[in-house]
Image (cartoon, rainbow, N blue to C red; front, side, top):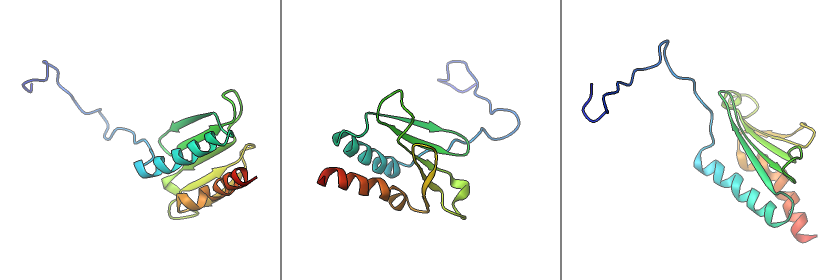
Length: 119
C-alpha cells in the first residue's frame, strides 16, 4: 500500500485499457459555446445538450427544452482521414455540412446568425 492512500489499492481494470471517450478540446468547445451564446442573444436557442461516447462527441442546440435539436454538431475522430471528423446536422437529422475544420462546418449557422442580426 502507498502511504496516504487511505489503505486502498488502486488496480488497473483487468483486460487492458479503459474505454476511451471522445471529447471536445477547450478551443473547440469555446468556439461552439460562443456561437451558442450569440444564438441565445438573438432569441433563437434556449437550451443545449452534450453527449460524449466512445466514437463521438455531440453538441445539440434547442429552441425549447422539449423540442428536437435545431442543430447538432458531431466530432468523430475515426472519420478524420476521410470526409472529416466534423458534421453539422439539421432538425430532421439531415447532414448539412461535413469537414475537417470546425469553423467551416459551423459556417451555415454563422451565416444564419448574420441574417437574424441584420434582418
